[in-house]
Image 1 (cartoon, rainbow, N blue to C red):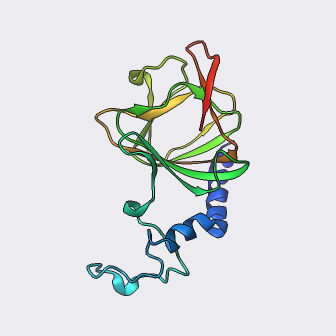
Image 2: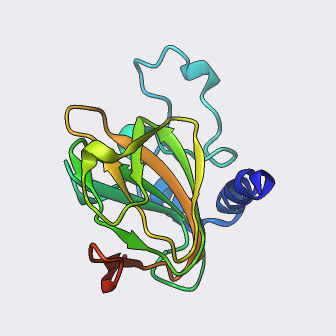
Length: 183
């Protein structure tokens, strides 16, 4: 099982790097350094890579969608609301959590930065969550209830979530019964 957890996000990241038009679109759109010289104040500008070889987007230039200060996301590859593989980066800001929900399909998560607080209970209580630090690999097993986020007074958490879409959140009540769907 651990091999599946480790392998799946890596395979999707390789696919994202090799085939994603979205990253190249960000780069071509001027949000990233493609076609640009290194900043004048960059001490390493002599080592600036050719952006046609290694396109990249620095953290401060990621075109996040969503509500700043709450939850934001960026689709690296694919779209979780559509059929097919996807890789999404999700940022939970401090004090924000999802509600109890499940997914019909398996999802794989890597904690990129911060501490991700999780629960498998149907009862919402951020004080009864478990911390998963940066570097942790996890999975949301299909059709199992969970919820997660970033604790108030803490730091933002950034996750890489990969899976096969469509990947709806199916919200549940405190008895675990479905009450609605979101992405």
